Length: 278
Image: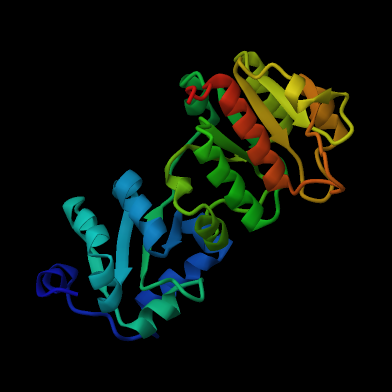
């Protein structure tokens, strides 16, 4: 880390058993995140996107000397945004982190307050609603895929894994900071609210009579995805406007939920924003 960066970062933190270190590490627990409203952002890629798109939410940023040199551009952006950066030893960062290899950098951030009302006020055209998604990797992959497909928001029910758990945050690769993510929703009530705003709901179902290729995706709609193992409950699928099957041309029995969501979102994006001809 340069001398100038060291001055701005303050004296290095070297005690891995300090109260500060324990309080940061405690954010790996959902109960602590819920109580504090804060969460961990680990690794230079995620921190870079956090600084770029949500710098006001950063409480503290921690970086080792080696990472400070390697990712100087991230730190320069953080300083420019008024973020206070703490220089820490490798042992301190390892004690703070949930990840085995946080690559020398992590931040503590305040969870954003995003509501379904605020999302609907923006007249969204493409949404995805996730019901009882329990696998952190799957949830993170859906958020990342939704971001790449240009979705307006990701909606998550209260029975799903915490979107701000360290594993989910890492698996989004920074996409968590690119689009609204609404948590704590009740599926049936959300489907009703979407309908009242003229947003069609499409339930994915392996045995549905309508194929993905035959659905009109040019109007505002929301894909409704179920659990990894059980799929969407029939009570919710019935409540949706249409049931849609993703065709499988090979011998695979089914698709992973995150894969299915990404396919549906990209098909929607193509229908709503046709690619320019070569």
